[in-house]
Every structure is written in C-alpha cells, then in structure tokens.
Length: 225
Image (cartoon, rainbow, N blue to C red):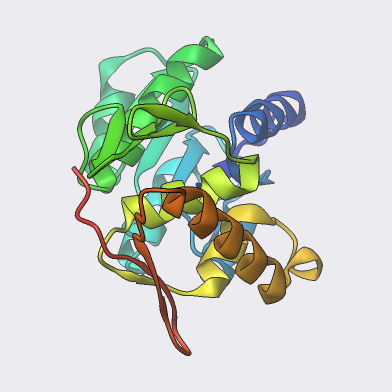
C-alpha cells in the first residue's frame, strides 16, 4: 500500500518511514501540510498518517483541506495531546482513527491495517478468492492450502489487485505501490512481475484470476471476501 506520512519531528518521521517500509508499504514522508497537499495532488495514496501538531497549517486544517479536495483515503492522526477534545476535533475534521503519542509501533500498524481492510471492504485479516488466501498480517499467500512463494514485489501487486478485485487497476497505480520515486518506475517491470505472478498462481490447478485489460491495466476477476 502507498502511504503518506506527515510528521514534523524528523526522528519520528524517519522511524515511521523505515518501519512502514519494512512492513511492505511504499511511504512518502513530509514535514508539513503544504508538502502533504502537493504530494496528495501528484500521487494516489491508500492512507495518510498525519500529526496534529504541525508547524504552519495545522494537522486539523490539513485534514479539512484534503477532504474538501475530494481525498477519501483513510486518515490516522497522531497527537501528543491526550484530552478528548483533540480526538473529537480530529475525527470531526475527517480523520478515521487516532493514536496518542508516545505509542508502540505495533499499535500504529494494527490500526493502519484495520483502516486499510475497512477501506477495501474487508473486516478480517485475510482475503479469500476461491483457493487463494492472502494473510494481511503475515504478508503471505497460500493456494490450495499450500504456501505460495512470492517475492515482496509480487505480494504487493497481488494484495493491491485483490483489495481492488473486479476493478481495472492501471499500471501506473501498480508502479506507485512498488516505487516511491518517479525515476525508478518502468511499466515493463510491472509486466514481468505480473507474468511471474500469473505463472505461480496458475501452477498445476489452472487458476487464472488476473486478466489484462488492453490499454488500461489489470483486473482481478475473482470475487474476494
């Protein structure tokens, strides 16, 4: 998943980017609201983590701006303020959940995963499509009850397609899931990765859940639950 982290404290921002990247996400981290608004217009994000205590434009105003611009991705707020008014104001501004500083990364990650599941229409920690099961917590896949050996990039593509099942996903969206920088993106790499993923899914069972929609992208044709 592609995440936007908005945190002015440099050490915490670096820590969040490092840990979330290790968890398999593509992360863009910025120190203020102005850069966050720019990034939100340039790229598609699946979720944002926003500190309320930003310099300049506050986190609350940033959330209001994002929602007024039609950004519907889930927002998790970070706040060092423990009183209930701050939490209520954040949720009223358009945030979906909150974590109070200081926090354990495991709590943050659990809340992020829950928001991502809900935004994709899933409430469990697994996504199932026929014989294929995706474990969102362990970042593992199994086919016909057998572990499926996927690379990190193959897993990211599969997870994104399954979260957006029966929808056409453009190559550009998949590239954003893999590479944070424009100069690293190559549509040919996506074709190679999808080709490898298809072969692993097909195996000996003939399971073919990924269609190519010529000129548009890819479609996961199985219904996921």
